[in-house]
Image 1: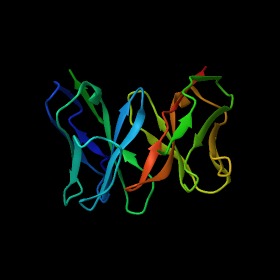
Image 2 (image 1 turned 180 degrees about the vertical axis):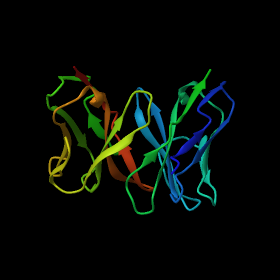
Image 3 (image 1 turned 120 degrees about the horizontal axis):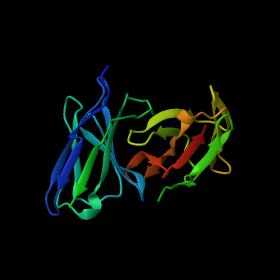
Image 4 (image 1 turned 135 degrees about the vertical axis):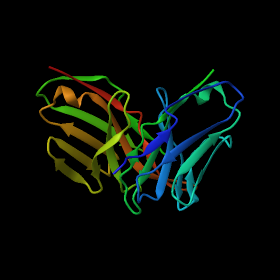
Length: 112
Length: 113
């Protein structure tokens, strides 16, 4: 069974640009969560989706948005990039009713 | 703001010793607690979950939970160099929009051979 797949693996953008990251969950997993990981702040919760609906959102500005498609694949978008958005963005999926998160390898975003 | 506090380390132990990792959390109503392990350059993976007070053992790992003290710990017996990683404590917390898994910043463990 394939794991959580995130694309692209690396991204380099400049300030003011926007970026879209993609996440394909494990087959059968309908819940997808996104996290931002930085050395200073650790893993911070961005949002969670289940059956195309956002179930929860973390304390991030409106520049961060996401969506989930009917096949459970998810995308997150960051508009008007800032230097501080440089981070590893991790996606995790889980089975319905299960607490265990399965993480993808992440997308390393660098904003110059 | 729901928080998880962990000593960032590094915690250094010799091979074969017991490594003790500690974590405190701010949410008194949380019922679910987790330990994730993250190797350098890799993504986190779940190693233990605990839901009730007391100890839970799984091989060389023991998780301990004390809800009254809002404290959870992870003991690793017979530590091996392959245990060298960052250990993330997490709990399911409630915010204004629902529940989310809240992570600590992690404790880096180094096991020397």
